[in-house]
Length: 222
Figure (cartoon, rainbow, N blue to C red):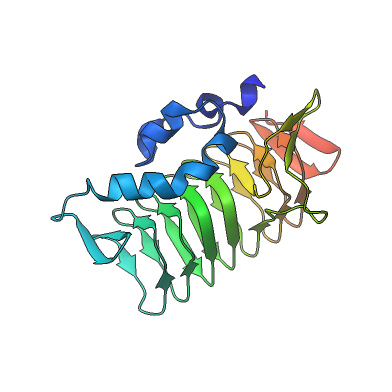
């Protein structure tokens, strides 16, 4: 359980505008139901000199770049110097951190992207949290609902943790690299500085500083 705590997965809470939310809860899946209300609370405090407020419940940093073909539905905060590329689809309840990249045809829903996160090509990220400088390769996605529609469990070698939530995608710690075409199954938690091989199917908890080659073949980084 210790390795699943927010303070173990995310080294520096100041790398997200939602810092207070991470300090208020011990585990990341506890945060997911509170993203919307947090955006509304933070949005009202943002400087009009630094953020535009083009529509109700949407705040976009003046230094951010948003393609005219991108769609943003609130509540949403787009951080400073973030890049929202062609045909990005932000469905709501999304915090896009400073310097983050949301790419071509990428879809976000109920997510927190820490600063410098990259989801640049054909990604789906739903009901998820991506830590500082984490990166999802082209076509990698989070699956956020189990096929039998039961509540999502977080599975480790030692236990199964009942979350009480029907929708949880993936939790990526800081500096996680996810290879192209990978599927992160509901409730996947990946520790910081871990690399996931392309075309992987990840389920459960992957420890930090690991190289995930395939199910049952995970090695520690040297």
